[in-house]
Image (cartoon, rainbow, N blue to C red; front, side, top):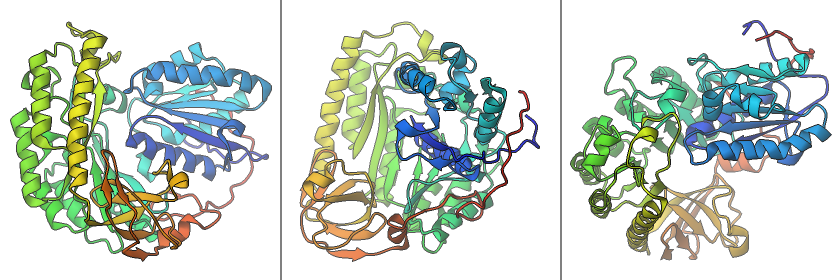
Length: 496
């Protein structure tokens, strides 16, 4: 692509919407897509149905991802026929995988772009409009680190900060390394500059993101880089909460645990995928740890942070899994006492080594095991949440976390350990981004409830921003603010 080709606003203002599927990294990328479009003069559509540009940020990991995408594209085909000028773009992991196949199966799609060239979206939309032809551009390696791009953040109080992209592991069930490439680390100074910019904008909580977040530093040869980064976040004035996801047990070291325990704003929360409690299955998955090592990490974390809420990912029904293997998973879950678990039934993912393994299990067997695992974990989660009844917890108030808040006259947010808390604000004017202290009245399997009067309520700049009109778009590092107007042009019309 011609580097001199710039995407500028068109004469008539056009609206956009971004539909996001998959992991936190996709949420992060979608904020950058929205920021790029707003910098180029697009405005966010009031509704998905009325948008002039619809962007799909896809996931290739989830079950039936292909069917979901092509089903949604089919629904838009008649809409586009009735609305001349409407454009459809497909990005993300499924775009990186399927490439031109997307346009072949859905020829009404205008733009296909991959995980490595998010920054090209506005240019590709202009080029497709100018040339009246679909534009497919898939970069083979990262061209611009997404975190340096403009961002249209969804939250005034919490932000995602990517510290690395890609992964050097070879798990047989995972297609991420093939689609996002090998690990690329940002320099620590760049990460901290972004965190500081977010805090200056009123953000109270930051989540550090990476496909294998605690392997951070491998590219520049510092195995203690992640622990150092956590400690450095602790020195940023105004940053109240630091989270990270997702670490790999192979790379989990004692210096990271010490940094978690000794840095006050690092939250007592750990999400660490287990995947299976069977050592035989872990070998088949190419997970380079065993169940005893996994449990020893949990023991060390709890010795340093006794109140830490530990969560995990588990796959049920991996090819060749026996009842004995599954029982080993139940045993580890019982020993680990997870606060909660994201449990998945294994399904074949084209392009992964596991898809071609023998001994794929019948759906009925996988379903029955899955239900047993869910029942055990729910029992453990419920017991842990009941044990918190009567405790006072600090809650960062959120928007959209409580689906029944309007009916129950409650608000919702996250405790420092990540648990979801629904609470009664009483007569207080509490906004998303404010911080309250509440006493837990009831512990349910998946959340905590407080119906007591607020113990305290602290109004914050994030709360002020959450109710302020006309919140702007971040223009990448180092600052955030509304974009300056750009000159009008008709587009560049280069060919791919």
